[in-house]
Length: 212
Ligand code: B1M
Picture (tube, helix red, strand yellow):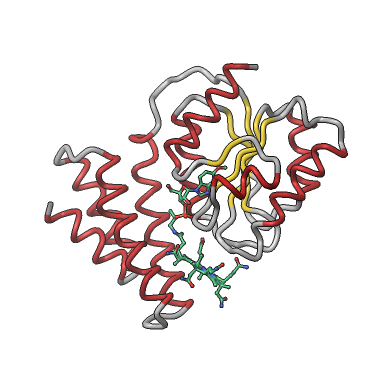
């Protein structure tokens, strides 16, 4: 669809204002929010990622594209979230210590809210102790950890250890995700679930909350 290609293209150029307008236009035309996200915003961000990897563009370009992505996603937020759903449980989410990538984490947060879960957003660069302390203080059923760097993935193992040390490991489920993660890594560190995308993360978190 032409408008989705335009959204992807302007996102790659970091034209946040136009991206916002086009996302709204696509919604007005009746394009499903999930399609706008996948074929417009995420498509654009993937191309940005490839160019970044190949040294065709650099951090400043990626940052403006990321800003356009976040602004477009904000417009989609109410459409991705199911309206008026009762809270089914509380979860906390954050990008692990040393890692500042938050686009994926923000998408997961949106999807969690869309499932009617109450979400405590800890932001980026979150220490294992903060995840665990928040889970205790706010009575969270699930801790959601995101990581985009291979160098910060091991921090997720530290979150599992911190939960064990604090004596809450049997009360809290620990979910992990982010581009470099795998099912095998999840098993190795003793986390409870790996999900490859935001929608399946929200389904899994809801399942854990309903089990409680
Ligand atoms: Co960075 N970066 N970056 N970056 N960056 C990557 C990740 C990289 C793969 C690029 C590359 O080289 N190809 C590479 C990592 C390589 C590696 O670790 N092996 C990299 C690097 C190296 C770096 C720096 C070190 C660069 C530098 O400074 N030299 C630096 C690190 C800073 C730090 O964190 N300490 C850095 C900085 C940045 C920016 C600040 C410029 C910017 C981040 C802006 C921001 O987030 N606000 C940035 C970006 C944007 C990227 C790329 C281009 C895009 C990431 C993204 O947002 N993707 C990325 C390349 C790429 O991925 N192709 C790259 C879109 C997002 C929707 O996907 O986060 O995977 P993702 O989330 C998905 C799923 O993974 C899943 O759901 C989401 C949607 O379905 N998911 C979960 C995510 N979390 C989940 C949690 C769950 C479940 C599912 O459960 C709890």
